Length: 170
Image 1 (tube, rainbow, N blue to C red):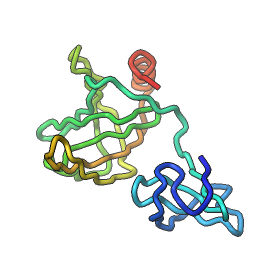
Image 2 (spheres, helix red, strand yellow):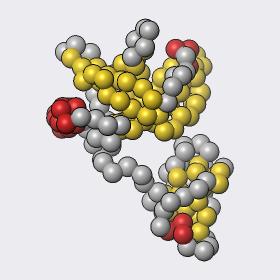
Image 3 (tube, helix red, strand yellow):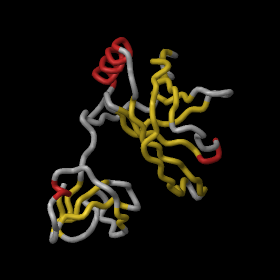
Image 4 (spheres, helix red, strand yellow):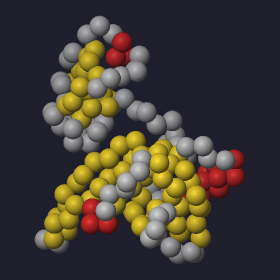
């Protein structure tokens, strides 16, 4: 994505924070690396353009609403999947359920319709943001987590690929 001016190509926000970049384009002498404060999109400003940087290697897919993330712990917590790929996922977790204490988690992809799950997927939280929602006049805070899968074994990768091919929607 590319837009004219110093703003986020994803959401149009103008509140940018400086960041370190490993992008080749950021190595140019006039380029500066930023991240959007609103949507956390990494970008490079190369006057007079802003260029979004995509870190994902796999296509994002939406899952049907009956798929949830089950977070292992003393008590299981559930979260709604925003999008998922073979490399990781983004999910929403209600603030009232408590924040996740560790950036390394074991999660399960849980199919509520069939009761089946893909269990013990090691993940690492790489980004967190907070969002205030107004649902039917009730304000609630939702935490958005972005995580990548870490050290999946061959069987987990195969089942994840099959699950995304069967249920994933572009």
